Structure formats: structure tokens, C-alpha cells
Length: 160
Image (cartoon, rainbow, N blue to C red; front, side, top):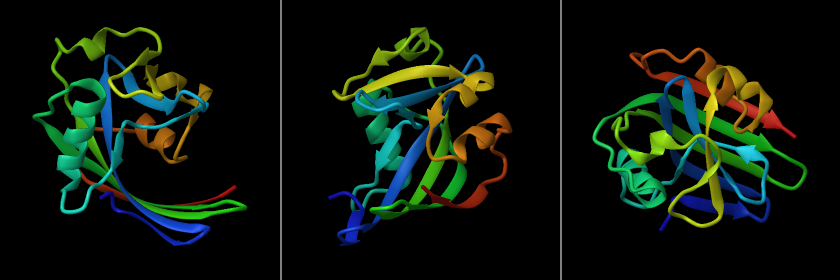
């Protein structure tokens, strides 16, 4: 059971784990096939699963990628307020190293992963502003991303 619950019809809470996967100046993103909004790969945490375990499971499901090294980089409290909903998300974002020989590093254009309904793309860090990337904090954080030697805590409220 995923750690996601509705408080009522228009309010919900999510616990999410996401991967920051960099390779040759690019970052891996995904989006639903019917959407223009890109986000970092990952998923919702299952009950009694650590956020690291979640990310390992999600990356295996989505890319057949076995992850051995990851480092917590950002803890994000994200509040989205739109006309018809209010979402609170707690996100754990990990810097993930992938093997140089993994097939993921060979894709040049959009590509399909193991799960239906999503497309993926390596996006140049200096071209992130050309894409609709959510949540909104991701682009500036990636543009200044260092080695994740310090965990950064961010609280972001977005009203749409």
C-alpha cells in the first residue's frame, strides 16, 4: 500500500522518493505520455519501505536498473494549491550513480522504459528552462547541484 492518503475530496498527502541521475551534463526525466510536464524518476513509498528501498524498486521496475550507490541530496516539503485541490508532498531526492555500461546512457532522444504510460529523456542541464519541469524547485536546484555533500531542506508552496 502506497503512503498516499486523501483527507477529503480535494486534499491529499504523498510520500515520494526521486532519483537525480546525471550523465555527461544531462539529467534523466520522465513524463506521462499524455502530459508535457517532466519530473525526476521515482515513485511513492510503500508502507514499511524506506525511501531508499522505494527508489531501488522503482528504478528496477522502470529501467531494469540495479542501484548500488545513492546519496540523499534534497528533502523537500512541497505544497501545491490549485483551484480544485491541495496536495502536500514530502519528497526525498537521492543522487544516484549508474554504471557507465548501462543501456540508459545510450539514449539520445525520448525513449520508453519498462513501464507503460511514460516516456523518458536525458535533458541538458543548460536547457532545463525550455521544458515544463515540476515541481518548480527542481530546475534551480539542478543548475546549482554540487556533490550533495550537504543535505538541503526546501519548503515550497506553489499556487496555481
